[in-house]
Image (cartoon, rainbow, N blue to C red; front, side, top):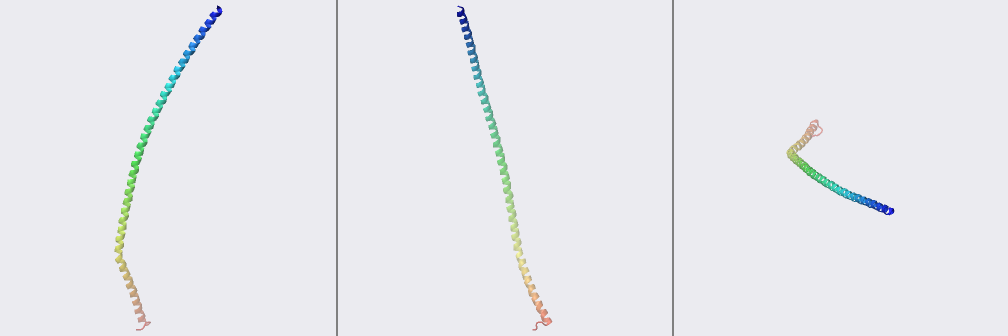
Length: 138
């Protein structure tokens, strides 16, 4: 009988230990499920934060792109106007040169005529000088 009581007592202690182990296992399982749920929630929060950050960065990049495009366009317009003004200025100068050249034409003719008359005058003067010295006799 002693052996039976002892065996029953051991059985009760084993049952109690099994109950404690089972309870502890359930507690660990619940804790792990909560940890996994917390981990998922944290991951979802981090993913949402990243998406929000990316959206903000995309918006900033779009804004910067728009500003840069506007500035480039403004500079292109300035360059176009400067080049256009340069061509107009060159056309005006070319027109002035053409007008000056056309005004110089009569001066050239007058200069050429004066040079020819000067050469004829020199030849006649030489002839007169040679005749008066007696080198040439008429």
